[in-house]
Image (cartoon, rainbow, N blue to C red; front, side, top):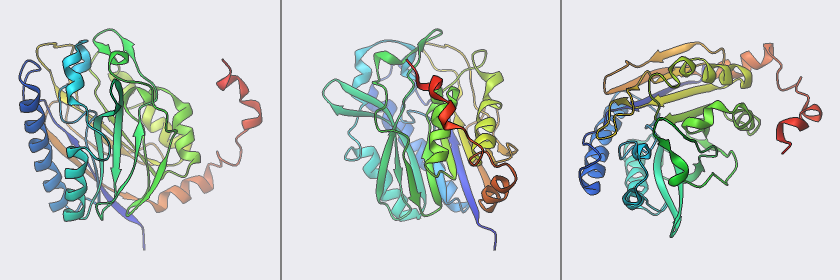
Length: 289
């Protein structure tokens, strides 16, 4: 029997402008996303991932300390606890991107991974932190990740996470493969004119080079008051051959669903022996200062 896993990706627009009270924004975005999680469960999804910093707008378009108030501890904060309860109730694996506080003044761009029985398995912290125009001032908000490239054994298989800007760095994508990942989720917030031409190039290339599935998520719409550009959606799943299995629209709130045959991983790796033929003894320059 083929090992078929049904996955879901949630891409949505912001419910409120960034000038509204933070609690209002956060509650509305959580409620909106919860509706899509429920819909995913009804459609038989076994694993679901949301967009980067899902319970707010992409606030990194400005540098204001008020946004620090969106942080939560992981896993003890209310959002991850809610998602643990939801995962257990619906019997699905959830990847939950949040704004994490470790201690006063120490913040990370984080995704929690929750198994289908509601158990919190661990978290990934975004490693590569951009600080560039137009309006991606992330070093003001996040420390670089320090937990490595973990992979978790879940009810659907071995799941890893890479977050947004990370996708431009093949080194971490390789590490996730070496750690046994069968599927990588990349929750993102990226706008047209900056990286759209790379969106369907880089991550399918990671899938091919490492022989795993990828679920890439981007939000949609423009976000006031910053209006740094159009978040162009087009969330997708691709297989280890780099082929698109399902692609979302450019401008609509949407649940993207795909059935993935995880048996393809072994089939592809048997043909393309990239792990066998690697030469780590010759790669020192990659990690040289």
